[in-house]
Image 1 (tube, rainbow, N blue to C red):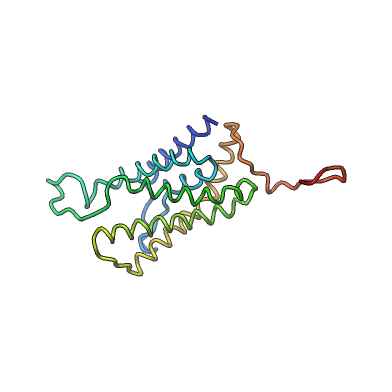
Image 2: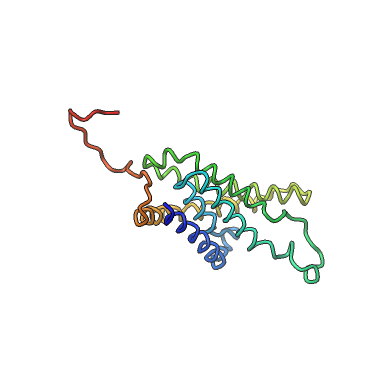
Length: 199
C-alpha cells in the first residue's frame, strides 16, 4: 500500500512537470488537456478518503504554485497594475471537491465499472474550471460568462477526459506491481456451479 501511495505522489509531481509542456490548441478556443488534474482524478478513485485528501492538498498546492506568478501576481516592481484574483490555496479546496466527486463513484469503480469514472473525470474537470472561473469573476466583480469561455471549459474537460482510460490502465498495472488491491474484477466472468452459493 505504501509503495502505491508513494508512486501516486510521484505521479502527481510528474504530472505537474508535464503540464508545462502541454500546448494550447488554438482552433479549439485555446483548450488543452490538463495532465495534473487528470492524474489526480484517476488516482482519487483508487484510494481511501484520507489519501485522496493528501493528494488533493499536494495537487492543489502545486497547481497554485505554478499559476501564482503571472499577470495577476508576483513582484510589484514588475507587475505595476495587479489584477484582482484568487488567493493562493483556493485550488486545494477545489481539488478536494473534485476528489469527493470521484470518491462518490468508488463503489462502482471497485465493481469494475471504470467507464463511469472516465465520464466523471470530464464532469469533475468541467465543474472545477467553471467554479474557478466563477470565483475569479466574483472577485473581479464582473459576472460575465462569454460563450467562448464556456466552449473553452467544455473542450478542455473533453480533452482531459479522453486521456483518462490511459491513466486508469497505467494505475491498474501500477497497483498490481505494488501489490495494492483495486477490486477490478467486474469484467471477469464468474462461473457458478450448482453447489456454489450465490451471495
